[in-house]
Image (cartoon, rainbow over all chains, first blue to last red; front, side, top):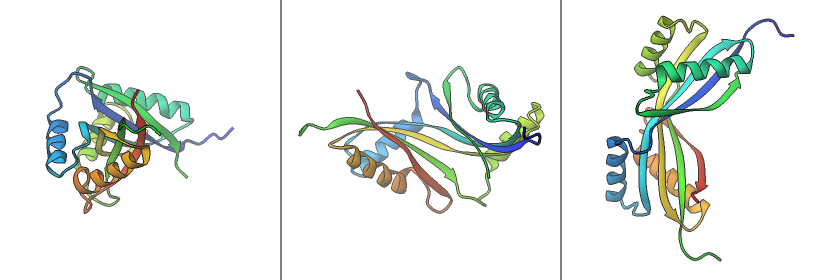
Length: 90
Length: 90
């Protein structure tokens, strides 16, 4: 059993909930059309986080990622979050 | 051969380049420490995009995602981008 904590990187994605207004996504969609990207039908803009930390296991790191996302990274009223990846850093 | 275009969703992640100041990430790291997340060693904050569009193939959608990311979604001077996923929408 490896006693000491290991360094993990947790990738978290936060996006607006469906139906919530997304002015940044709309503005980017308009800009894409102006640049000639006529096949683009919609753009949604959100946030992406990489959180590094020291944990005893991947499971501990994943749980912390959920806790951080729910309490700090995402606004539960208008956003949803997804833990995209949790991996040990060399 | 399916002639008509299909609907694809392209997920793009844009993060600050290493070494570039990341005030939002720093502020979130400070907030995490204040909330008691003492195992967090760093936070990097970036952007996440979901771009929907109609393309003849996954490859065509992936190429458009690269073009959009390089020209519109990421600032090449201070940011890097990653095409996280390209998938056909049902």
